[in-house]
Image 1 (cartoon, chains in turn cyan, yellow, orange, brown):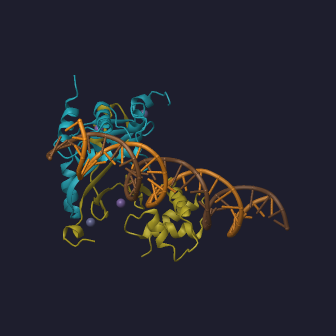
Image 2: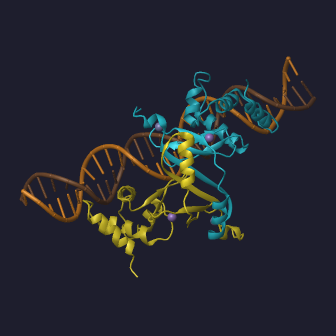
Image 3: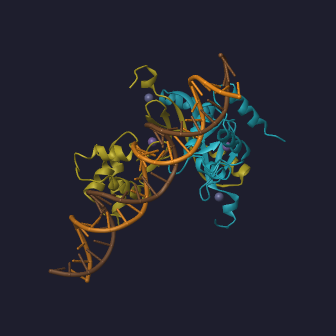
Length: 145
Length: 145
DNA sequence: TTATTAAATAATAATGTTTATAATCAGTAT
DNA sequence: ATACTGATTATAAACATTATTATTTAATAA
Ligand SMILES: [Mn+2]
Ligand SMILES: [Mn+2]
Ligand SMILES: [Zn+2]
Ligand SMILES: [Zn+2]
């Protein structure tokens, strides 16, 4: 089965003035086919066989293009690198403190929290961020690394 | 009225082998007296009149000491600097996308979300992070900058 | 097909935050 | 006085990300 969302993403880019280059296509393809939430460097390393001369700046540039087109979402963290998510539907993440694994999960939404924040702080609220932290099954079962 | 929480923080440090130096005291005092959520550089700049020779590394070192002692909490963001919060009680933040202002707000807690994440992802959940983003009253009323 | 042109790439430098290192300094104990 | 311990300062280094610029290339149309 081909990846429908990748085809839609390519179509969506074609409808703008964004050119399709081999590097851009490969980065987009990697993002939409991988199950995880890779960093820019993950993507760069995964494609270095295919594009030995690709610059890391190209990865960052394209990730910004994809973000601006609403095709990927950036997950930012304080210390380390951002991670990128080709799943732009509403969902939250559970993150393992030990190995950094990120797992999707769904929850009804926190409209009530946004409403309260509006009232108590007087903000015009646009969105929120929520993540759960803990230890993943693999790390729980003792096998370190 | 003197700051009770500052006194308690100083007392808590005294009970360990952490020495009290003028710089350390000033950083702690600044954190516990300021209403905002300053960056390390905010603190550094605010104290440069008082300590013209203080190194920025001293600010970072002390923030780490305070964090390890449980006296301050670090709020990390993807792009820019971390912010530090001397209020370690349970509370959430509303953040202005335009000016970066951070406002405290309270909410009953999201135990249900943590429980669901445990079940659906098989994690041992420890904690969570939640922030609401929007536009603050000042920025809403048109006056840019 | 070729020419045109705006956009994308690669290489590199620069930025900004944070951490590491090493010498110096300031207390306290011996 | 000497040694010891930890803190501070100055500086270099790490690291992710962005900016710059010359070169290459994709899309478009003659
Ligand atoms: Mn996801
Ligand atoms: Mn706070
Ligand atoms: Zn794990
Ligand atoms: Zn604002």
